[in-house]
Length: 299
Image (cartoon, rainbow, N blue to C red; front, top):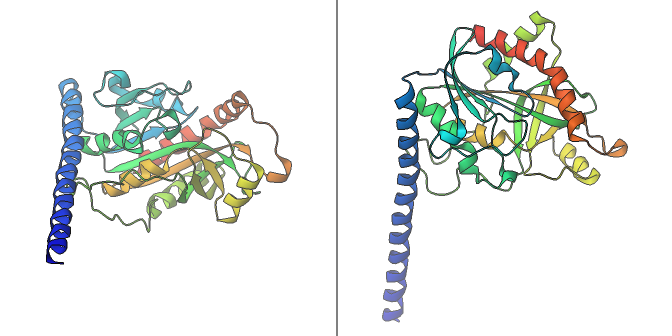
């Protein structure tokens, strides 16, 4: 009996040792990647952004209003994934928007492209390491709330993660953030209020909504839309939530916007044509650009 207990104790200690060793290596891997990426960017510029911006599908026009200091292709940045989505330019822009120093991702990454969520969110880690304390994210999504129509702008007030994954799974690096980050306020209430004030002043209709993230790339069935609506979601998309989780883990404030690309009412569904969605988003883009510029000017 004593031999069995000792053997069990040795096995437990061995497992704990291997896990600690593995965890340490994983922590070192992420830190080493960040250091290498930062080394590359710092070899190009010492620019320190205060705001990080992630532009989603069809929403890259905001980049035209940035006074650019440095523009880096994702392909040239160590450990950056490369966007495979046609409408994502794949550039990291460092410069000034409405007088504020920004790091802007013109194009993001998605789980459905085959990347892990750690890879998808790595650029958020980089923007934080560069100095950004606030993250502004945008996306397009299908509207399930009957009050939403294609082309509407929505400020995200909360989200639901149905991706079956989380970018924080695995060993935690305490230097990057806490093991169990609080998510009681994923989207900053003061920034939401500022967005609504600017929208009112600019005459832009801005609604509130809860965003649910799924992996994609297949769109949802009528039954899935009913389910998502029943659990409290107003719009559904395939991005944003992992980036917001990592931003909160890193201690950043977050503001998020959605452009409703199509109406996803289960009893009136029509086949989706991606080019039609892009045209809808492009038509709404000037409003979002004007809204974001007004918000950034007052941050």
